[in-house]
Length: 408
Image: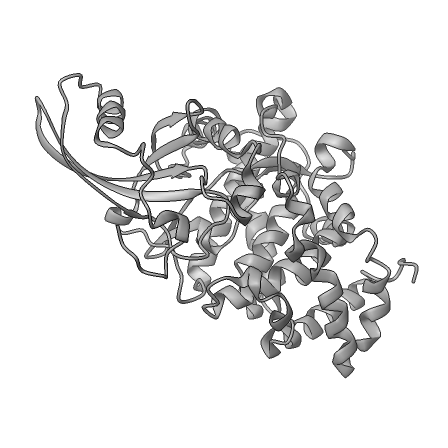
């Protein structure tokens, strides 16, 4: 195994059970070839430092022989962390693997079948060749890297790449919106979002974010006028955010548009090839307001310019694909207009406040090659790019009425 410090520490040492015997059994099952023999196995980390925080991932290059001859294949192994630390504390006793297995075995195949029946040849996911919850939680996928797909680590997405990502998100949302109206029980297993991860809301990078943000507002003259609004949120921002994510399960509203949210739609959960893309990591998929996924993408995938001057154009592009897909798949119900979508974004403002104060500074720090943005909580808020964007975004929010009915 490699000792390169650019990889996640818990992926630098092979787990004992990832053995020749284990992979032989997996391949016999997936290839339906009882005579299969494994000739060679090479394991290495499958992700870079900071790519993900809820799993351990390895790349397995296998060479095996069957009656059909010798085959070499690259696979991705995804399993639960076994070392102690932040990652393990966040996912112990969680439902992330149950959720993702349901996504790969039931939900995503159903989505693609509906799209194909309507003439849409969209591919939403890479094949999962093996999954198990006992004796350990593990999933194995075909590796997209040999097919030319890559995770973007050293640059932002281009506008064409972003449109590709929004195209797939809009089609996903449209299919799920129709299914949710027709058969809500189909999504019964998908009840868990990022805020329901065990211990997540108590992590210091969550609890300290708003105090650090308020301190920054007080230190920057052009931002001081907003301090009173965020000071008033100190007691309830995190809880209001969590309630927004869980709205469909706890208190659904007649005026909200609900879809299956990806739940973690950011740059490291997409792989790109030219201007095409593939979605990965469905561990946090859940039913919720459609604006939530778009807001998360806006803060975790868009550039500052795309969050700014190109924001409305990208919302309209997403909604256009959403509407067209609904029509193609035979849904005749009401879909949101641009104005309604804008209004719902304001209605879910606590989601956006949380993204602005907590997730965006980490995203900017990660983009600037910070090895562990969780450990840069204070310095992140001193970043000039972040402060300039906060000023722009808060002014826009103020003009749109985000703060108009807030008691301070």
